[in-house]
Image 1 (cartoon, helix red, strand yellow):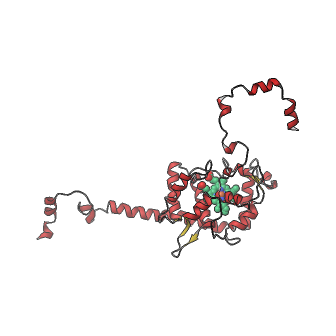
Image 2 (image 1 turned 60 degrees about the horizontal axis):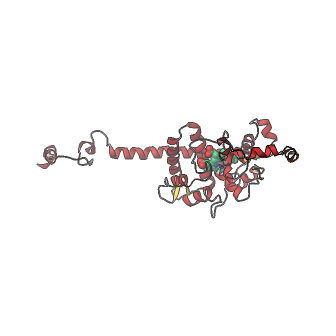
Image 3 (image 1 turned 90 degrees about the vertical axis):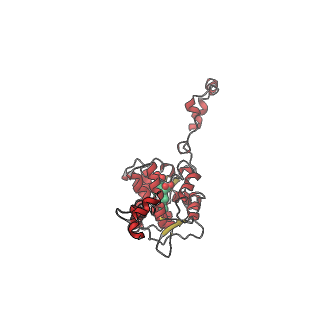
Length: 285
Ligand code: HEM
């Protein structure tokens, strides 16, 4: 019907308009998120991006996703309640935001993730506006052993992102996402340290694939309680980071009255040998 209307309005005069130079505004390339066409770069959530790329999240050519609940259950081990809430939240992004409309919607559009109420600052920026290698490198540079990103490494990384883009909203949402990432794709070592390997992190964010040898969490194991525990554990890394900072600070500026603080030699400062001999004369006798 639309095509017919367009054909009818095609006149030589209108055609002549086509050859006129376009304004600067018209010539500007339209960002992928605004051109109305769905591509993988519209998906700013790594989990959904991988699920789409692996063909398990059913998405039509316009970006409408229809089976998030099944994907969350099967690939994130999401329990019934969490699945319902997440699916409802997703559908609200593609309606007018009302609960009523979302209740009746049978899909949501992946193009609506960006700029939504779930979109926030201080994210990793790896998938912002398409995949970004520099930001991936930045993330991996926080790995303390060069092999894996522990919860503590991720928290340090997030803190650095928060310095670039401060804000409590970004901090809370980002914390929940990173904690969830480790919960779904991570492992625990012999000392109880939770981590995601650098390799798996890259496979997810760059290759948009499930990590090699990865097995989805057990059905129902990702629920409100366990997610809350994961987020709590993630934030508890602040204690470790704080302790580490204190240790470094006490190395550099030892407590008042301590030998290090009193003696320039022990704290690595230049000193005068004669003055040192005078100061230590009692011990030299
Ligand atoms: C268990 C499944 C999920 C996992 C493991 C997961 C993980 C993540 C992670 C790690 C990020 C941060 C990306 C970054 O900072 O670059 C993220 C971002 C995001 N996720 Fe998910 N996600 C999951 C499910 C969902 C669901 C169900 C939705 C709802 C539609 C969603 C919506 C978003 C959005 C909108 C962002 C972008 C936030 C931003 O960068 O501002 N995610 N997700």
